[in-house]
Length: 238
Image (tube, rainbow, N blue to C red; front, side, top):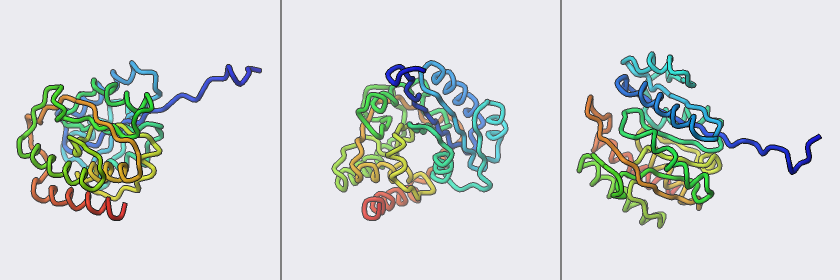
């Protein structure tokens, strides 16, 4: 019988959540590239795609990609899709990445590194650390600065990209949050609740490419108000 000192330690698991809504032009490529990257690391990995009731071929494309796939019965929003994925995730570390091609799966090791080395509980891939190529709309950047400022005012945590969807977090952090957001405001809710609970938040630089086809589902006014409201509610009631 092997001694305890020689027994293998349980392997750390990684869950990658990819929410998708009408991204037939990119979802297959994002999944394929994510699989290539994860095959190079030593983590046991599951890729979970959550389709938010797409009306294009996104769901059909994902069905043939050899990943775990869940389809919502109605279109509910990014927040609902992510939360559905979180409920299914089995990993010790959970990663979120957008499906529209704006994030590079090849940068996953950089996003994971602070968590794997025990330096962070929540890692945010920032578009604005000025170390990598960024192509984002000025209006988006202005709105993000407002959200960043409010979050720093309330929590004391200085962040350059509070709205980034490219993230890695520990299961302990995720389980503590009790998320409620249904839309794009989920990123702010996650950040504020992590900071308020004393979890370590770190940013790493990522490259970013604004979509060049179709249009974003983000409404600057409507969703901007929801994000501001979610920051305040998460701080007061989180």
